[in-house]
Length: 144
Image (cartoon, rainbow, N blue to C red):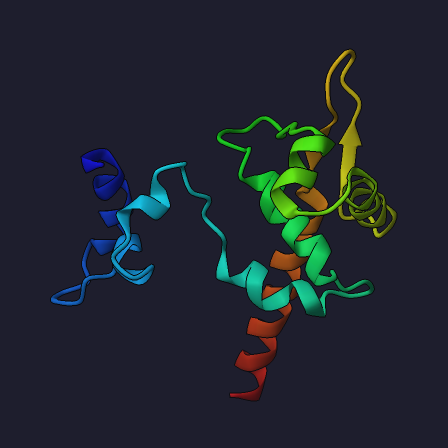
């Protein structure tokens, strides 16, 4: 658990007397971080439901977060649909539907892998979130 505390405490740097560690933010429960953790940009949380021309549904956003829990480097993550369905508490068919919807919206590229699960590339989704944020920031500068 000490390693978990060290990783989760990394958010503490430069915060003065306020404990901003992940453990503190999540109620002091170190055990919540026992099975790894995934960083989620606030911009994603703030903008996924407002993307243009296609918003993400809550289910699609949760699909993205679940897939990202399997990404630990530059390579696209490749969890199986079965694993994602188990984690999300939905059917394999529903998970495949989320992937197809995201692909249809242009936010996901599924990369077939021979004899294995697909790899999921959300580069376009992340690009569009950043572009939307930049537009908002520039709009605020102009109105200030």
